[in-house]
Image 1: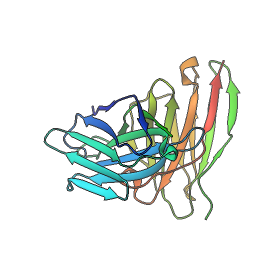
Image 2 (image 1 turned 30 degrees about the vertical axis):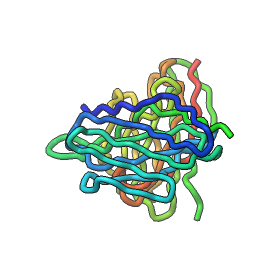
Image 3 (image 1 turned 90 degrees about the vertical axis):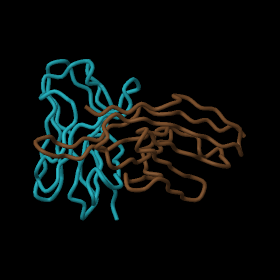
Length: 116
Length: 113
């Protein structure tokens, strides 16, 4: 089945620096890759997503890149701010086909700390 | 617009019992999906319902089941509870299902003693 590996598990940066979180997936049929941010004690919220027919997507300070050949995708946050501190989850969606049901596999999360 | 509502927010059960959790989606969303969140395993997808039919399923044993009603409200049931079932159970609603933005509820925190 699909497997998603996420690295690093913890990341500490200085305010203003960039942060990069990487995920790899195993099933080349996966076609949708969202990133969720979960602040302490709160529910996960979508921050950016990318579909398999696109290589890069940007939204202000946040960007996601997808390399289908290597089966990995990355989250890039520039000019980090203390409010970026949270746990970030990547995910890969495996569509249902044939007799198999689809699935949505999350990475184990990266705890990002941005120090003022 | 009201967000996703989950009940109960907290509950304590003992091993062997069963539990039912409820989720009311955002109005107009026909997709409801369920997730288990634990410190060790992160977020794990359980299943997704769309228009009362299970459309996608994660890798959980048959003790975990769900259903969806005609008003899109969904319930999740766990039978024969085990200590390892202690977790935060999140539900999410979506317009596009698993290929679109998920709007999560605050979760139901289950403790199994």
